[in-house]
Image (cartoon, rainbow, N blue to C red; front, top):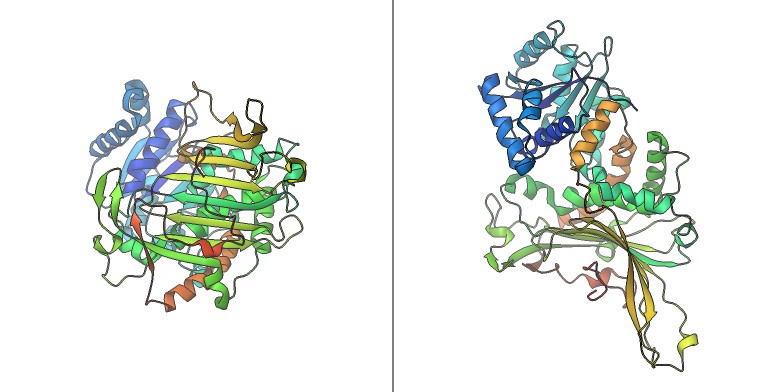
Length: 494
């Protein structure tokens, strides 16, 4: 699929996401020769900057990420693509002047991608203004709108937002971005599953005991107090990133890698997840909040001590839940998902535990408790695929130990690419495989809504875990005593 020249218009271009992710990603695409000739990047912001000031700011953004890999010659070429448009997004005049700027003959491509790196509350207003100024019309070129999460605050708000923007945009024009799906290791889950025929006979309820998906962070909420206290861990991570990873683990093979075929299978998984009645929320979900503790030997405060956080807040910084997928492949297999701030280690992983083997064969030996086999998929920061197996120890006696087969995702000489590089390039190509269709978003909200509604009512208690730990004690989620959270990607410590 060939990328066409386009004009990338970034709303909120002076904000944190643009500074840390978007502008460095676009620069690295230019370094790799992936930005077609004629592609322009137009920044929208309220600050009264001129072109020279904007290009100076972009230099700082890029150098902060590129370090020794910064190429002055390539950056000068990149600078030629950069433009700045000053305006207040809440004012109609901003869009009239934008339309006039884009109408300048020969300067900007008629293919336009609008990246809304702004507050979700502003999505509808911005799209409405763009439509009023005929900036979403595809008469002379394609128009694509990239929307950052969260898409809505709950099921009702997501449906209301979809209803509003669908007045102006066809579903094919909307690119709901989940940067997790752009990570190379997440995409490798599909390859690992469907390109290795030896796994398919084992990938079901007959052999798999349970599946764990973990995203832990050692950082706190930084300066995001106002946003985070209204969102919480369930909305921020579980409803989006972790449920998406679950669909990749559990989905059936799509008929092709074409976008709609891939997304159809993901939606089937979400539709098959057993609903959680409100009276069963406590058996299927758990929440916690970090207190004081130590991170890397440094004392840190608790969540209630953070800026802009009310002292009586019951917003969860840790959330876990147990889900069942009621289809032929997975019926009866629990999927455990958890995420948390201020935990012992920053790590994203998928851990697949196989059933216990029969032990009768070893009844007259010293093998009394044989370890279960695991498939471990490290997403970040360690990207790995490991299959743990039981082997005999050297020596005269029958003793066993766990060994792992490692399949490295990246060779030592291969550089990592940021998820946004893949996703921004996919927008140019019109490849929607790694972007969310609305029914994916809708069914994900249906799964978590009963939990969020129950937690909103019960505001008298929330478990507290010390910063630097692996979270609160939530072992009651597990179906069996032998099931516990796995926090390590190595055999030595589970």
